[in-house]
Length: 192
Image (cartoon, rainbow, N blue to C red):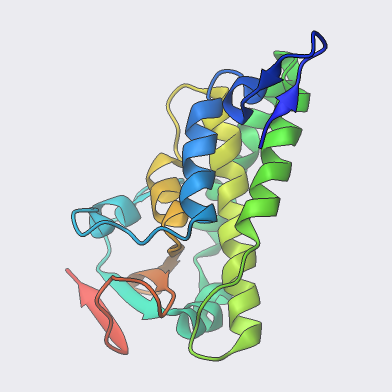
């Protein structure tokens, strides 16, 4: 994928997006090729560094269907904090005259991030899983472009490898995993 400049020069997506564009392209490339997380990826550590701050709960790694069913039980105050941080870089980018770059990055994220999700045969859950990951990816893309301390960076890594960090549900931090993931699954695995 490339774009043409007004001088007729071909530009790579990272150039078009400007500062932070390379990070956006890196995240989207992993999603596009459906990269499986490397064995050394510190999944539990990354999951606990949520966009709303560190959550020190045991990690429950669950399948896509289970994650979709518990998503509406996520702690509401935590979710409000994530939403505030998710929207924060947009005004900063607009004030810096980078609104078009943000829109281009979000459009790329939507094109790449809405691919199929392999699950346990439940199509509704697959759509919920895909939509929730896309919502998180939107925050990650905006923060990557805005620069500075990025509260979405840890979860962006998980999302870019096809995982869905759901959030705190009751006394657990839930991470949704598609069936094709290399993260070891039982029905529910709790990592202390």
